Image 1 (tube, rainbow, N blue to C red):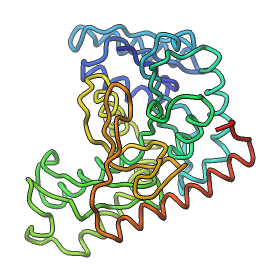
Image 2 (image 1 turned 90 degrees about the vertical axis):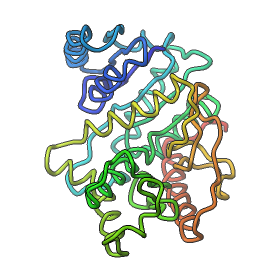
Image 3 (image 1 turned 180 degrees about the vertical axis):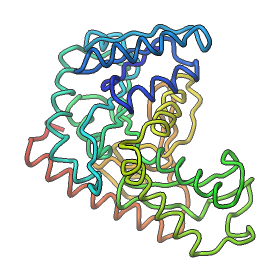
Amino acid sequence: MKISIIGGGGLVGSSAAFALQMGGIVREIALLDLNQDAASGQALDLLHGGPSVADQVISSGSYEHIPDTDVICITAGLRRSPGESRLDLINRNVDLFVKILEDIQSAGLKKDSIVLVVSNPVDVLTYLAWDRLGLDCSQVIGLGTQLDTIRFRSLIAQQLGAPPTQVSALILGEHGDSMVPIWSSATLAGLPLDKYPGWTANTATELFQRTKGSGAEVIRKKGGAGFAVGIAIRDVIEAIALDNRRVLPVSSVQDGCYGIRKVALSVPTVVGRAGVIATQEIDLWPKEVQGIRKSGQMLRQTVDTVLNRIGSSSR
C-alpha cells in the first residue's frame, strides 16, 4: 500500500511518516510539500533509518505521486496561534485546503483511494473534501477525535498510575470545543472507572478539561503537536491497510447516526480497506447523545458559513 502525505515536510506530516515507518505495515511512503527541500530532507532522514526498521520505499515530491496512491493523508495547513481555537483557523485554512483539493483532482485519484484529513478544523475540512472531491462518503475520513481519545486515555492512566493500554475511554463529536467525553463506557482493565479508589466526579471533570486543552498546552510549550498526532494517524492508516475493521472515533459525513446528517464529526466508526465500513450507534447516556447532536449543530453552522463564502458542489 502507498501512502502520500501532503504536508510531509512539516512536523505533523513527518511525525506521521515516522510512525508509519516504525509500524512497518505500508509498502511506500511519499512526502509531498510545497517546500520540496523540507520534504526531501525528511524523506532522506527516514530512508537512512530503514535498514533497522522495515523494507519500505521512502520518497518525496509533489502531486505526481497521487495517481497511484492508496491513502492520501492531508496534514498541510496553518498552525494555531497560542490562544486560538481550531474553529478560528477556518478562514485562514479553507482557501489553502481548497487549492490542495483542486491539485489532487487535477493529478487524478485512484477510484478506490481513501482521503484522510488531518488539517484543522478537521471536521469542517473533512466535509469540504467530501463535497469537492466527488468521492463516496466512505472514502473520506477525518482524524477527528482519535487524537483526543488517545490523549484522554493517557491522562486517565497517568492519574490512576495505570498502564495506558488498559484504559478504554472515548471522545466523540467535534475535534474542538464541543467534544464529548463518553464516561458511560470508560473502563480500566475492563472495570468501570468510577469504581476505582480515589476516582471522583471532580477528577473526571478535571481530566476532561485537561484533555480538551491538551492541543493548546502542547502548542504553548513546544510550538506544535507532532508525536501523538503521528501515532493517531498511524492508527487509522493501519486499520485501512490491514482491513482489520477496527472501531475508531474518526470523523466522516454522517447520514443518520444519532440523528445527525450532512455534517462530518466523530462517532464509533468501523474502519477498513474501503474506508468507513459502518458507523455504530451504540447506546450512550442521554446527555452524551445530546452533546454529540449539539456538536453536529455547531459544526453545521460553520460548514454553512464556509459554503456560503466559497460555494458548494452540486451535492
